[in-house]
Amino acid sequence: MSLDPNTNILLVDDDLIASRIMKEHFTSLGYSFCKLASRVSEALAICRQEPPDIIVMDSHLEEEFDGLKAAEVIYKDYHIPLVILSGYPKEFLVKQNPVADLFICLVKPLLIEELLVAIGNILPHRQR
Image: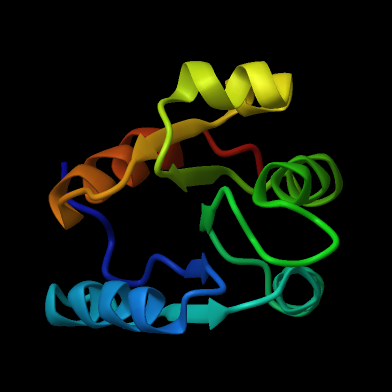
């Protein structure tokens, strides 16, 4: 499934190298509307000002919110679909926080193609 090249993607990860590499992959595939946030506060500000079509977020962020709690707040307040990236399988994340069951969770390391398929599958279900 191919994505519209105008799909607005927000990548939230406190690992700036990983998020820049992911952004470069998206850009090389023609997806030019990709923003980066390294903190939950940045992601929330972007959601308020210019809501993305989808958010790709790391499950483990080094701050007051972990990625799952941040995903829960973003989904509840802004109804933006999320893909959660983690080093752990979804079953583990759901045991840690049942809200993980609401999102597509992909285990790192992953291929960019896997992420594109997940995004392509979730976008048609977005509530506008």
